[in-house]
Length: 246
Image 1 (spheres, one colour):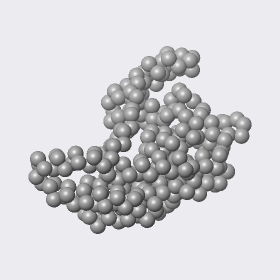
Image 2: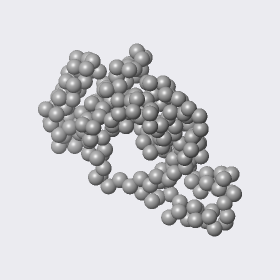
Image 3: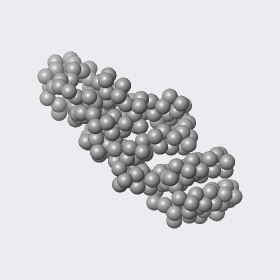
Image 4: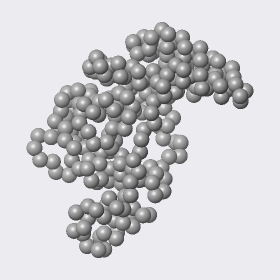
């Protein structure tokens, strides 16, 4: 794709399709850099890695990826570019790519641990405004509570909690509560009635992060309504429609 002018970083819309079903949704949220920063630090939908087009010089101005991390390297990289005030441009609201999502549990991102996740995002904390630091701390706290019951053992959870506490992202009260709650949950894990009650107790301490909202669309209607699509021959139109259907 040829980009005119002094654009340093650009994005375009994509459509996702879930496991060869008829469920389609927009992969990216159309926004400005400040809006993307907020979405990333509050763990809402923002941009996808493959939706971005980088100018080479822009990429080399950033801190690049932290190659020690197994996953989630991209958000800090993208945020780093926004903190440098690069000239960002939204290229196309019309989707230019179809991404078929196939999840079998083998993805590295699915297997990564919360400790790797917070290590990734903590690199951008120093660049945030005072207001956004508060948003980030609140979001991390909610995320920790949500992840806590999935830790295999107390030692691993304690390591993550200490990391957050030592970096100023968790206060002593949160530290004590989440570790105490984890012990209680593990004690009652195999007692069905008690487990259910204890599980609900965690919501006394935090309000769960809202799930990422997917606005489902009719991909065929989106395609057929595009002016460029209508300029194609009937054969080319049918090829594109069949590609989406199949």
